[in-house]
Length: 376
Image 1 (cartoon, rainbow, N blue to C red):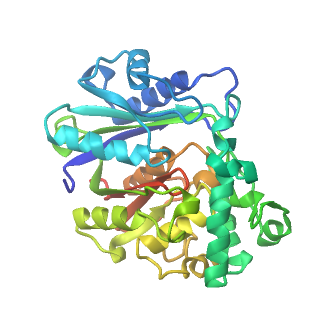
Image 2 (cartoon, rainbow, N blue to C red):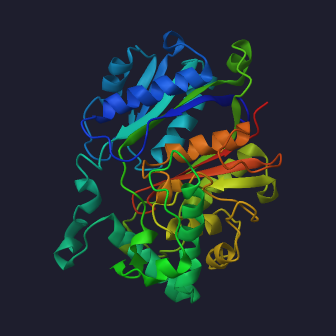
């Protein structure tokens, strides 16, 4: 599958508060923008793949979106893998295109938890809810605490993730949160769920994003000169809930990353920029270690040494990630990866190397990886 398919166009809405907008209308706006970016008409689209909305899962959701788009797809539907679903859907679209089941697909997601229903993020966590185990943040706090204890990691090292990503977001005109963060301000903030502070946690956002996937051959026929090749993809899924896992600090990102690197035929030295899922600051640190860029327990020191900065060894989340650009899960990271590979990102990283993107769902339950190559 290496390089057989491309991302030919990207689009999104404004992020933040979108009062009065439902998630389907947001998806339609983002998809229209992606089609315009690709330079193709919706009449040629024969695939519509949608990430299930977090705030309100619904039956036949993919078909509802296709109807709103005015498309009768050969292949359509929705997928629930939490935040891992978007990169996974791109891989499924690529395989369906390669199998001749469709030619051009819209992969999209939209939701409105900021002005609508955000209950999914605060829900009780199984039988342990009677002991206070509530919210998405609680599970990540367990992982964060274990990481600190096992590797004797100071708060300042983990805080460097928030400081760096917020700096990138502050320089992104499309970011929901354009407020830079100092390390002192991070450390002075009270705990939200110990050991996590407010700035360890991502945004809650209304918004939508979409990408157009097609074969490299089709992109050539249509004269799309900014299409970004999909060099590799992979997935890995955890079967145990967070408090039942034998090891809180190793995830199925290991398998997902290995699969993507093997398909791409690349090594870590070939990666010049990363867009890593940062729903909480601990998440990209463990992902970086599971991908093999850092040894276990060393990613936080890498962040503190400036490794994620624009001039660092591996610039990360160059549009601000979930911590600053938008809490919209997964797809905006892919869009930023595409822009970096096209050379038209807001904070462009130079060089001719590839980009790795991680998507992750639940409490590190699901993981998907994309490796993107340079356009042209």
